[in-house]
Image (tube, rainbow, N blue to C red; front, top):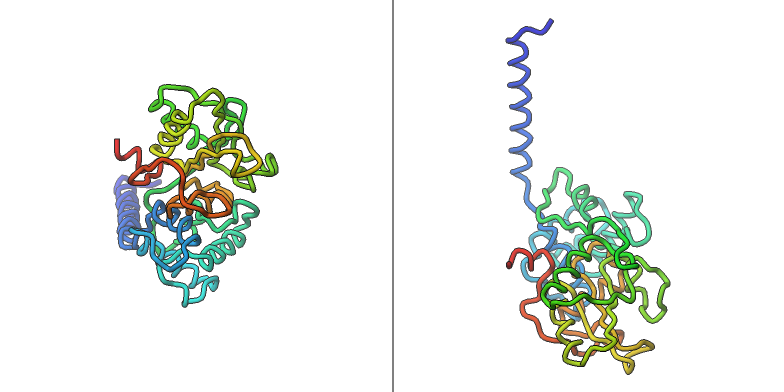
Length: 275
């Protein structure tokens, strides 16, 4: 039979253990997931080795962990989440059993935390949420929230002509809709000014968005929108976001951005914090 004194001692020991664990976690450096994912989208698209502002310290911790796992040469532990780091992170994801889009090299919350075991803790976690069917197309709940926020700013409901998680759905989309965070918006009946206004408000809430026209490809006028920092993005969508940050149009020709200027460029999470 456990005495009251023994019970109290057990509780005290548990509290001490929990306290030591909390202090140990507090002593570990912190990785900002938002910064890491932003760098993983932008850095591979750069023509040079410029670092993504605010991301270096977190990226270095991730690269050090990848190097410790034997997946990344120390040469590339530099705070720059370029193609070598993408490849190393994809190899780490595969080592966890992930395949396909789940092993694209774009960090997800589970793999990022697992990689950091006893090395770092993770803050500002990102999640695309659950997959849903909404207005007849697939998307995730993060994208749905962003869409509804943009519609609130516009005071109108938008028509979605293609959703996310649609591999092989439209050949002209070049794989951008294979993963999450990507929508095509119909523009029938809209003036040129209205199309631009829609693209702008989509950008305001955290989409990389462009008005596409028939002279650019085998498609009618529409608005193509990619949710920045959606961790379910396909590699093609990741590249479009990186190009958007770099002032480009998200097309294969990598021409100058032809969309409405929005400054600063915000993710959905940054937009919410700005309100």
